[in-house]
View 1 (cartoon, rainbow, N blue to C red):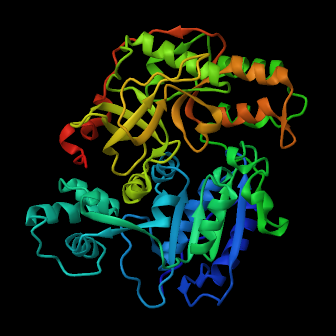
View 2: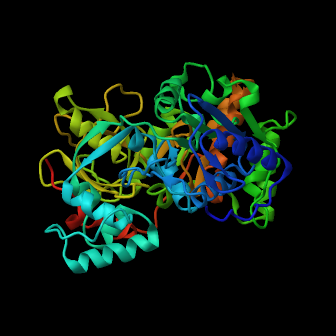
Length: 510
């Protein structure tokens, strides 16, 4: 039996949520009070939702639960390596819809992976299985031609530090993806699944997860925008019975308070219209340097954190202004330009390649940085933002849309492959699940939404847009008031991406 963790200090609403979750965990075969693992209750499926606005403590609760389950002996299945389960062993996976959303959790010490990476499991080369099993304490030190003794020692040292098989192999100069020979839909169910950013899920994704996890806990923000593909049905956790939805209402502010969270929560006040809200932003900017009333968009920031807009016309206009500011040629991309994946166009006979790309994080909405052309025509070398193994080379179709024209300009393209749009500006809908250190919000678009008077799920649309946009900022919010662009101080580059930008680190083009 493992020693139980010290009881965390919770607010009343978090304590109630913890008690309800502890009850659900007992049904899954884990007693958090005593740190005991037992057999799960037969045929007992549970779906719960923990909902609350930004700053209400959802992530802290998720992290505390993860730690308590791990301390009780529950095995974390993160997608890195899924070895043989011991008799009676319980498992936990922490999931997010995108690599960027998963990386936000990983940066806070929570071993998260993407939903797709759990739905599909890799078929590994036997040599990799030996190494991964050894790193996880499930086998003897391997004798393998794939790695030298020095590489094995480096891998083990890194694994003890990071607890990640890909990170361990990277320290040894290898990549886990080098040992993947194929992919298959997961056949064996797991036990417990925590899903962050569940406001981004649609009903089909929830059904897929319920097939794998008999105990499922959704963490979501009801003030965000519902997924476009929901067809107006709202968020999946809103379909659960009220007794299965636990709401966190107390705002747990960041150290030193957060003017960004204060602004986000002010949007719930019915008396606050757009004009009053903009005055509140201005007042916050006078008190705190983390809020800036910006008279223009800064092109230098757009390469790594896109401007958040509502209208597609604004997005396209800002993208062309960004490219002009960096003197980007019309017929090609510059290394360092940001891209957004818009899907993968491959025939059915290439289904294995599609699954491979999606499992590595190249799904619709994924953010990437262009590193340069690949060795074959139509291929691009990319850095996938937030991916554990970010470097990839892939057949690409890059579209640069033109304002007022139906057909986009395509600087280069393979016949088929991953489709990308430019990512210097993105719609607020597509920004959900992501966070950046500094966020530029294009206020004229929100003003346009306010003037239209549209309502979504009982709240003015502009308020939902503003809430999502504001809460994407981790440190600094820039409220852009004018349709102007500031020229960059430095040229585009990829030096900030480190070793991942090296051509030697990229996979071969198949």
